[in-house]
Image (tube, rainbow, N blue to C red):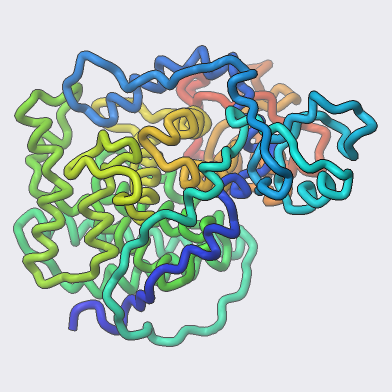
Length: 473
């Protein structure tokens, strides 16, 4: 019976998304740590561009375009206070200390309360720094994004009302969903490789379970995206992209029905790769021209294969066909840009690349999550939608779950749980002494109530430590 009774899909309303605003998705600490780490960015910038180019794996003598840089003064813009939205970075350097109620002259607007304070201080205009926060154009962009318009389908079977759970409480359920998803997608891709498709309703139902888990606790299922092996990449990547797409949609304020569609789209987005020879999928190094053309055909191949089965869910088909498109029009297969690029496709592009570059492949080593976030933020507006990129920063945090950090206590620790109030102070598990260069008795630490603090993110390979030994202890 197709997907009737599995995925309801009323037309997307972006009113909630517009209300969120493009930069309210990130806390001040998130953007300040990412955007102000200029020394780090200069050091790894070239490496990041090379990593993104390697992910694309298409022959070219020219690396991805370097973003233009302008002087600080060129980034300042005077706007009415009434035009401010959360996520803009205000610069009050032209005012005397007593002319405004803030301790700092430069700060990120993270809530409407800050805007109200500016109005109450009698200010009618302020300068915003568009290099460190949202611009007027960005603030309005999300409301203008076109949406996928899926055909109306019957409602899903009613479920019990969802209740919030802690990370630890949700983790067991999330693991079950994650394991089941890997098996379902592994079978789905194997069937697609021989030209047949099983019951797609199972994928729709799976997407619904993922939505429920992420709604109960937004971190548990996301944390499991880092648990994958190189030999499982093709199908585990689809699972991870589905998880990230649901989380991004939730961060952007989309409703449950649309989250299910996002999840299903992510789970199925690379179905076209089932028709790509394994020798090309697993080839070390860059692809030649013929291999590149074949690889670039996978979105259209997947789209056509699903259509041939009678599958007609337009939102999911949009993700399958357009997850490699870019806002600047340099993507494929249709090189669409601007208003022609739907919100679903923009979400898919960010989720796809983030998971790909943070995964070990035969042709590249995984990039550290913090470095991947810097890269995606740097390429926002070119390769990625700016609003969606900022939503990614919000959902994974500055120090993503599963990442390695160095503490001020001269220990290495793995991040085990995010802190919703302060992303720079997550829960961690310390397990290694940097002084003695040896493993120690694992110690869980809540940095929000500890004198210890994160000094830097670290590469596990540089320390020759196996994080899987301590995962979810």
